[in-house]
Image (cartoon, rainbow, N blue to C red; front, side):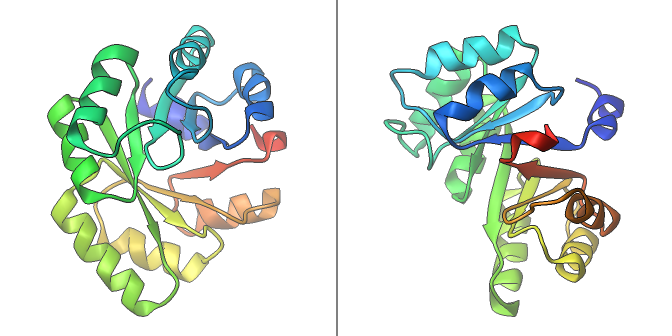
Length: 183
């Protein structure tokens, strides 16, 4: 997928429940953050998303039965052809780079100290993209975007088109959302 396609549809389907899979498959989104299922269903799920023309990023901490170490990342990259991983763990970000796939480092910002810690972690881990949680903080979105070089994804607690617009206008490159109405 090229950058222009991503800019035309900055929404990423955040698939957190099995009942969302069909809607994501039928949606206009090009990217899916897979946050449901388990190692037993993963091959079938990823095949379905690939057949529908979707890039799949597997959230290591949310899909059951997957380790969070370098071997797990290598296995996912080699056996499933995923576009990348989502993780809060810096070692998983490094493992994705070694495996030749993309990485999204998910950060949770609850106060100024958490923001500063996240910025340091991003600087050390060098993920391809960063996902800021929750995504309803226009001032923090702008501040983080100014201080990192990676594309910024925001997600969490976003419930309306207006909130999506505010996030994008504040500097977010993408919005990760679990509500299929916006896919």
